[in-house]
Amino acid sequence: MEEKYMSMITEYIDGTLSPEREKEFQQYVQEGYIDMAEVEEMAKLQGIILSTAAPEPSAALKKNFYQMLNEAQSNEPQAKESFPFLERISTSIFGSFLGRMAFGIAVLAIGLYFGTSLGNSSYKEELSDLNGQMVEMREMMMMAMLEKESVSDRLKGIQISSELSSSNEKVINALFLTLNSDPSTNVRIAALNTLAGFAYDPKVREGLVNSISKQKSPLMQVNLAELMVTLQETKAKDELKTILENDQTPEEIKVTLRASMEKII
Image (tube, rainbow, N blue to C red; front, side, top):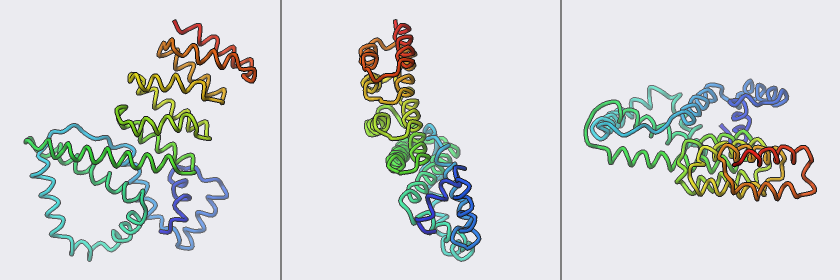
């Protein structure tokens, strides 16, 4: 499937197609440019990526997983002849950067699942390696999604980041860059909500405080102020005071921010 249709397919899967784009999408389907069977496979794969969490190590990964892998390889010629449809799906998935990463994450998730389900031996090192590879692929996918023009794609990137650790410096830096500079308020709020979940980390908390004065949107200022109340972060008072002293800050926002400052003990 050609790359030029991927943005439309992404919106279709997300349910964000406008009526005009929906009509155009259906026309491409009728004309054979978009294969609905492939679209459904992509939707299933996306569901796996966004919902699969790396499980805890516990199983005979080497004995079971690699045995299944060898069996699959030995049956490969027959599989290619019997399932030509899979070749079309493979072409669609591996034809794009995100598709390759998505497939890799799905394979790793399946490997981890069988590794934790089929035994009780000492292959934790191999399983740990797979966990590390899965984290790296999620990180790469998150970075790629955050660079997309589509708001829905950037929101997906933030959703992926919420499954990663606050100790991942690249992830945290990307989230703060999004929080402080993304043109969409919805995306910035999503980044804020994710970072709030990492606020137990002193560096993240400090970054959230420093972000207050960088926000021009009243909605973001209010959301950050409410978070500071929840965290009882006294260092935020100076940042909030800077906004209060700004003549361009709407009076109703000043009232809300003053109320928040009073709640920070």
